[in-house]
Length: 324
Image (cartoon, rainbow, N blue to C red):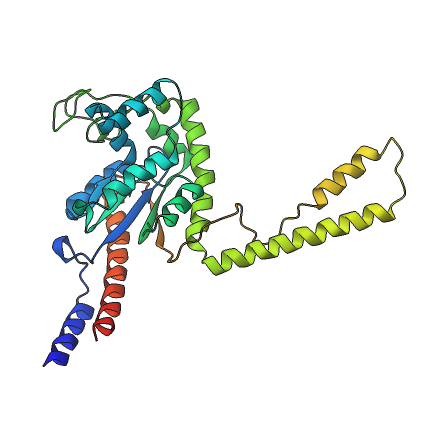
């Protein structure tokens, strides 16, 4: 009877093709949602939270604003840095995030909005034992990003985003739910928006590579790149020894050739040098963010349902034999 009970449970779990919702979520599902400025990350996170209320919605930037609003020691220190033009460190954001992610309220998992922003920050999280089950990149053309980032309004406390063209509030300048005044961010100017977009594209490419390549493959590439660099450097030295002294007219070109030969590009060489590797690669998906809000929401839900079913299957496969 005991074995029949286990088998029946496993069969019922495997035959159910519907994605688990609400209390039926796996032990936990940890999702990071990334995308360029104006891609609708915050709006999609809110929609996911509405569909899966057991998941925490974590927006590190909003958490900093909450700390400032509450007047906590951390908030006061953060406010000083902001007023003085300093940048809040990744370590600070990571600490805020981990405190929330590991609280009892997030026992079922979380949706992380717009973090990590670069490989070093992701590596710091891995060092502290925090890894994601899924990472979604919202994909959007540069033209659409630039168009969306102008005319955008934000409700500071909730993070709800409105737009003069795409998502107008019922009352211009005021939040639909609370009636509080909306604000416009200074970094939504065209020049700053382009700078932010360029930085995102560079960091996103490195993050995709970091999460899409296994630790063994990373190490193999780095080893090959190091060996190739050593061979090129040795070849350059031997060439210098065999070459007669150059005249003053062509001394500079010879030095340039030597310096460039010492840094070869190896096929498959990573564009960064990772220091910490993921123990388990997350499910990385690209979601087309072009189109209306409801259309994009359907794509995000489809990707999330697949990630949840994959995690659910992994937990189901691993549980019964450990118990046995």
